[in-house]
Image (cartoon, rainbow, N blue to C red):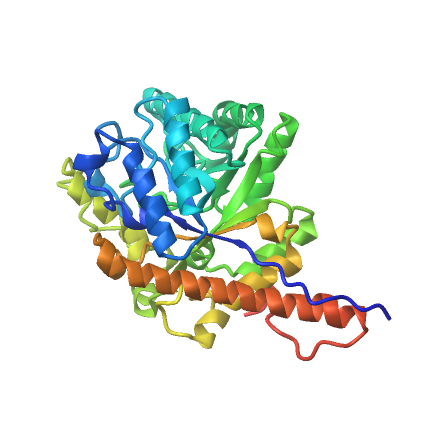
Length: 413
């Protein structure tokens, strides 16, 4: 029997800067955009987190979706109205060196397959600018959505993906970047009754889209930034998803994680089911889509009528809910990632994303202890999973010592 040392490997902790959109007041950051990044790097240092996931977005003056219609207003911490040139790069890199905080990746979450040709080109060009900034800042990936053309069926959207999204992946390849897709189905993105508005929402779709990418030589660019909250939203569980990917030979697809939970409201499910509220939402007036942007926020009742986002650590420990796939089993999530996926664990970003509505406080002093507690919880969960995995799958296995018990099993609820 060989003896292996105990060497647990921890993931790269990070926090999405959209957790506090108004850290730097717009009156300050609009004329001096990189002040927002400097302030967030300093805030991250105060939170004891080593990395930030830098949020880019179209400026509110340029976006086709009004802020009032957004469930989770985006943060343009990285402001790309002007080119991210060498001077801006030097300023941000200096702030990173001073604070000793790194970047896990750059994000831009938008509908890249929108049916409006002019808007689609504007979003394509913006993502390319985000890619250029990512390269200048020395990160390896951008993160975003694929989206959907709601006027087309799903098969037609796959064709559109090949025509419109593959060229974006070619831009990523030319820059040595991955494009990591978050899998939220975005049910409330528009006032239609379409529930899936981001076609890269489930493993079957990931594999189908990756095959298209492989055909065009950009398979290495298409990866998934997995968020367990979206799986809960769709009645799925992490371990089963990872097991399926392994069985199909695609367990290399996941390259990063958002740490955000979902708590299913059983009463809401009893009223509307997992499709959410489909009628009388308030986003239509007199038989027409409302022209008031604030009314369009009601489109998200397709989601929020039966669930609520969780900031890790803020929800009750509920083993029965874990078994029913009604909240995230954080420990098993981190164990399953190590057991079933092909990961370079130490280089895998584990990014806390804050979207728990009652705690989305736009006040730094009030939010600091909340985020600090959630980040500490996430770090300890990952450390616990790392220790269990190293002990059971490396140390004990090398000496032929059996592991006790069964644990959570895929495909079983």
